[in-house]
Length: 179
Image (cartoon, rainbow, N blue to C red; front, side, top):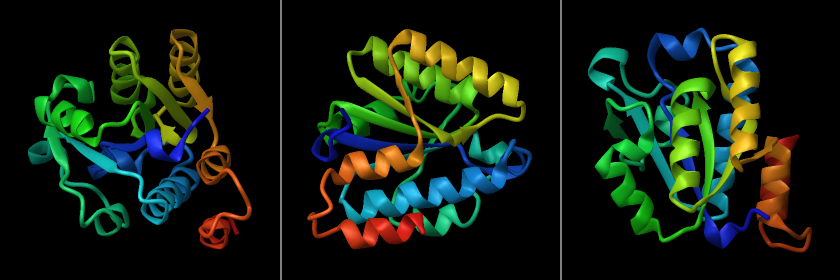
C-alpha cells in the first residue's frame, strides 16, 4: 500500500517539444498538476529530472512554476538512477516508495522503475500521469513494469491512498484537486 510517510514523488522529464507531442497530453497535464499539488499539501518530497536540458529545454509550464521550489536534476542517462545526483537526493529523502510520473513511459519511466525495483524500493507508476508518443509503447511498458513488480495505479487511487481517511485535515484540499 502506498504510504504518505514512505513516498517520494518523482517527476520525470516533462520538457520541451517532446512534452507537446505526448499522447493524451491534456489528461497527462491535469494529472501531473494534481499529483504535484497533492504532494505539496501532504508534504511529500518531490524530485524532478530533466533529460539533457541543454538540448531538449527546461521543464514546461505550468510545471516549471509549480515546481519552482524544486531543484531539477539534469541527466543524460535515461534511467534517473544512473544520475548520481538523483540517487543522492532519493536516498537523502529516506523513503522506501517511489511514485513515478512523467515521460516517456517506455523509456525513462520504465528504466527508472526497473532500476528502483532492482534496488529494493517499492515502485508505483501512475498510469494516467505518464505518457509516450505512442499509446502502444505506453501500454507495453506499463505491462512490463507490472510484470517486474511495480504497482500500476491511477491518479485518484494515489490521492486517496496517500490521504487514507476522510477525517484527515487535508481531505478538503485534496478533494478540490479532483473536482
